[in-house]
Length: 258
Image (cartoon, rainbow, N blue to C red; front, side):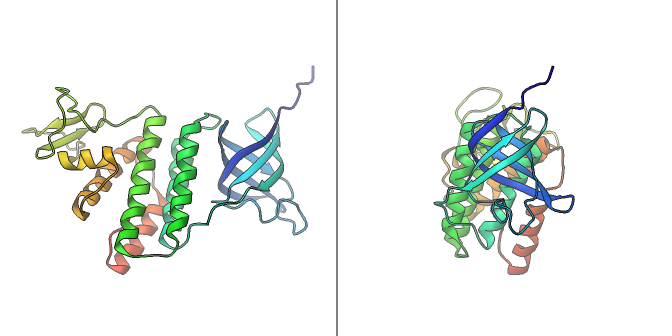
């Protein structure tokens, strides 16, 4: 018996990555609001006269239609839905960082509408930053990334404990030092913490929970904590966009957001 080919119409989506496939086609990793991450073959998309030519770019809101019941679908139509400025400069690298996190942590065809909304909001916020490099704009970019990282972990079932101690359940004391145990949350300062438990101040945990970073030291410590936690779930797979951001920041003598 022939199995009917499923068809998905006008899915609100973003392109996370596209790579060449054969001579004229592309394989596209897209993030749809109601379906999650999907792999699509865009046949003939590299031909200049193709209706898909030039549309399948990252950070552009699209409506996608595809068919297929297997792991690899066939893209039928793509329409640009517009309405958002493209990230550029340092904000563009931060946007690529978000894409890498999704590609490496989000399973295929696992719907996360709240995460999709958070991603869309993050891309739009980064687009509004443009090429501005003032310290306030770099801090705002970092805040966007921390918020998305926390949402991503929560949606994947790894929500971080930020407002209460992991052992006693007591409220976090902003004046106290903790070590963050990935599977338990913040633990009061220990005589012999495990090496994989990063140190963190209570004030930084509260800043992460509120999304407000009162000073550069707090923002930097929040970034270090999030890197350690994400590296754990990434199983130390390399994030290439993070390395590029670090290298550029070193050249400029400035801190990076990712």
